[in-house]
Length: 196
Image (cartoon, rainbow, N blue to C red; front, top):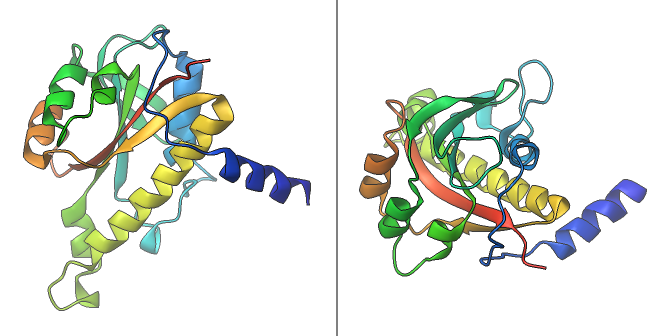
């Protein structure tokens, strides 16, 4: 019963927070947050549900101000953690420009979690479930929602501020990130230290 009470308290406390303190995030907090979003849960599972256990989702981290991490795009793999720097440099200003409408929190966040998916792979895996062969895209969207909720709850538990940014120019964002082939960026989760 204590576990459900703790979960209900966390859910009730969860908020979208777009204002960030100017202090950097700790690497430990960032790694914990990423593990909340798409961490390992056993030998071949992750902490979020996935249709057919396909797991077409990938997380990446755009670092602006994180202790002991170089600014730029870093990969994330459940079980292995943060990977090598994939692209150096502060990508936040360009990603802010690629956001739809005015979203200054993209540029001010200490870090951005990139939620990406192998949509073509998901569609191919479930092509027989829908006449147009696009059922996998629906499942990927559901999985992205589960990841997002986990990121929000992780941020709340860590005392961080965070906001989901789904309003992005898809082509511009993909061009900036230069993700590995076949991956489509779906959303950003901007995060930083909470303002006291």
